[in-house]
Amino acid sequence: MGIVVQKYGGSSLADADAIKRVARRIVDVKKSGHDVVVAVSAMGDTTDDLLDLAAAVTPLPPARELDMLQSAGERISMALVAMAISDLGFTARSFTGSQAGVITDAQHGKAKIIDVTPGRVTEAIAAGHIVIVAGFQGVSQDTKEITTLGRGGSDTTAVALAAALEADVCEIYTDVDGVFTADPRIVPNARKLDKVSYEEMLELAACGAKILHLRCVEYGRRYGIPIHVRSSFSQLEGTWVSNDPKPGQEETTMEQPIIAGVAHDRSEAKITVVGVPDKVGEAARIFEALADAQINLDMIVQNISAAATSLTDISFTLPRTDGQVAMTALARIQAEVGYDKLLYDDKIGKVSLIGAGMRSHPGITSKFFGALASAGVNIGMISTSEIRISVIVDEHSVDDAVRATHTAFDLDADEVEAVVYGGTGR
Ligand code: ADP
Ligand code: ASP
Ligand code: MG
Image (cartoon, rainbow, N blue to C red; front, side, top):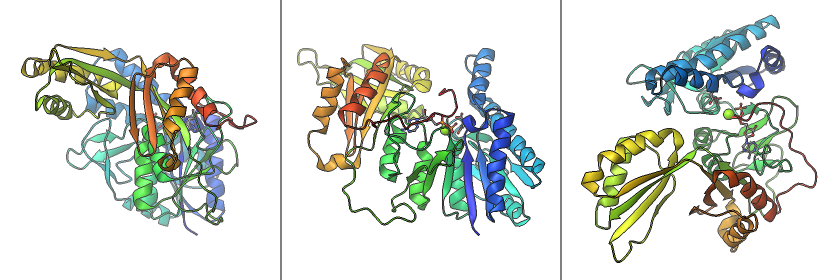
């Protein structure tokens, strides 16, 4: 029988009992005749707790040491899961990301996997062991330093291992029954999706639906690995992220739903560069400085220059965690660019409506904005792609905006079917 690759998130590994429960699930797969490779996250809120500790020690922890610190969280769970498995009479071998051959680039805190060379994993499988790999971490090819893949990165470890080991599917076990039409913590009557395409899942993940790490979906699409998102607390079938029909089902002839879901994100901040001279090359200079500082931007808006002054404002959003670095990089070029001042706002949230059916259905935007208006939500910025509309709103309006949109697009289930089994939602 083939290799089964699974991933258990922190909420599924919150304490000793949870670890024993996960060990039993893993052993059941082994008993059914499969080889099993498991990526694990840090227990519960360990990663947040470690970050809080670092912040208590210094306001600006060196990136290398932050990765060393954070990677310890997954090491704890991999060893404990391996111990719990051996207690059930099976042998397990735990490996750090580096030992498992997860090779990354050198960017601390947001490293990208560039190769997986799982020699030790395949040897351990051949010797009959269950393999447990610490998620979220790797080793840089260039610097040989330990790196981490960004928050939620254990999902990506799992899919990358599934691709390298040529597994048929990657199972992501979490604290809800699958991917829902909105975060069940905000919309209790959200609906579970049986299936979602890579394309829609990419947009959902990119827009903050933290149920899956964005790069895990990219990886799955590139290598054609179906991702089965499901609960470690139930035996229910979850959501299949794939472009193929669900295993065992014919492709449905029904038209696909227009909307896949509503996503929200509270992790961004907005910077406005006020009074930029309206001449060739100014925007290039500003965004060059941000690129040099390794900052990933999201929405960008430039106003038409006021005719009287020939000055324009440029606003953009970025991860809050990069806010300080971006402000410093921009302050450095103030004299050169000649802008007036910088404004920083981290009390914002982003709400996005996603669906492949949008391409062929007019009127989606007006319905979306109408729903926001009825809920009394003011729109700060707007951006669109072929299958997505996103708006920036006040941080405190996010929940109202998500619920109003969910209802306006008839996504509400008649009965509450979303169960949140665990986790703190942190
Ligand atoms: P894990 O610890 O298993 O990695 P995460 O907390 O990273 O779990 O992700 C699961 C959480 O994602 C859920 O508890 C839920 O609150 C949140 N979530 C956000 N958007 C969605 C969505 N569209 N469908 C399901 N869960 C979502
Ligand atoms: N432990 C890491 C985090 O909390 C990685 C993960 O859970 O996927 O972000
Ligand atoms: Mg996660």
